[in-house]
Image 1 (spheres, helix red, strand yellow):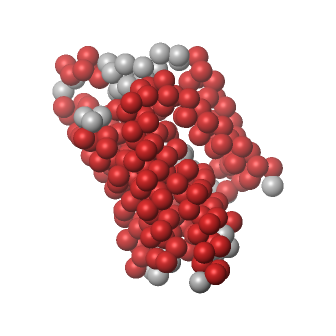
Image 2 (cartoon, one colour):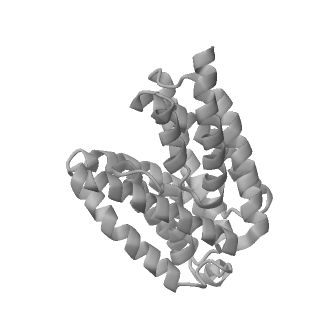
Length: 258
């Protein structure tokens, strides 16, 4: 019991922080997964517990976004279907491409994305999605599914920052404000996360004595983070998004160098 308490003292504060960050701009896994590993869990059990707690945190955040009218369901659901398919494709591709090459690609891509976002100061500040309503529902659905497919493939290949990249794509391509983009990303990402939770649980990789208390912290973080994003608007989301991209770059560069 003493050992369990020590592990929870490491995991819970970090998972709460991860839930908050993820609810605002995605990328919470950059904080929560290392937290479980820092507490001494083997990789697969850390991943299983992380998916369990993160999924519940994402669920709370998604409900908040939905209640506030910050989710476009057609976009989110179609993207979710694409993401599930893309994720399985990416996982298979990962078996064919060396990890070193993937990390090297990301070290180049992430700074390019960051520079682009810095120059696009008005990106996601207002919702221009309604201007695209003359597009047929079929065209909008195709675009959403392609976004889900491509970023789902990235999720299967590499993983971290999937929610952030979904949010950026929704805002950039579909011209949705960042808050609504974040809401759509939560719903889209939740589908693939829940699939992973089922697999990890059936495989016995979720330690519920750790995962349940951590999930409560993740849910609290998700609630507060989504409220922060909804009240703070796109500018606040933008700030947190840059922090996530910075963390992702540091993590990827460190792994590439090693």
